[in-house]
Length: 123
Image (cartoon, rainbow, N blue to C red; front, side, top):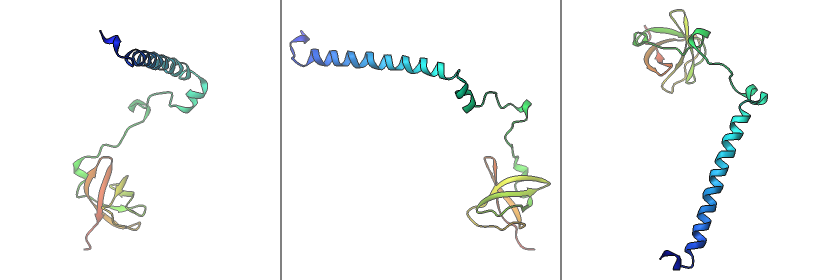
C-alpha cells in the first residue's frame, strides 16, 4: 500500500515525534503558567484586584456637548497637553499645531478620551 515509498515511514515517525513534543511542551507551559501565577514574585508584578467603579476607577466619558465650548490651556499643547474647561481639567490635543499655556481654545471634536482643540478665534 503506502509503505512502499522509502521516505514515508521516516517522515511519519518524524511527524509523530514532533506532535508528541509539541503536545508535551504545551502541557509543560500550562502547568508552569499555573504554578507561576501563584508565586509571590508574580503577584508583585501584577495588579491583584479589579479596577472597578466602586473603588474609584473610571475612564472619562465625554459627551458631545463639550464640542464648541471654550477653555484655557493649562500646559503647552505640543500637540497634546491639558486644558481647563468649565472648572475641570481635560486631556486635549491639537491637530498638530503648538499652543502655549494660558491660551484660549475651543473644542472641535472628541477623539476617544481626548478633546481635540484649536486656538479660539481672536475677538
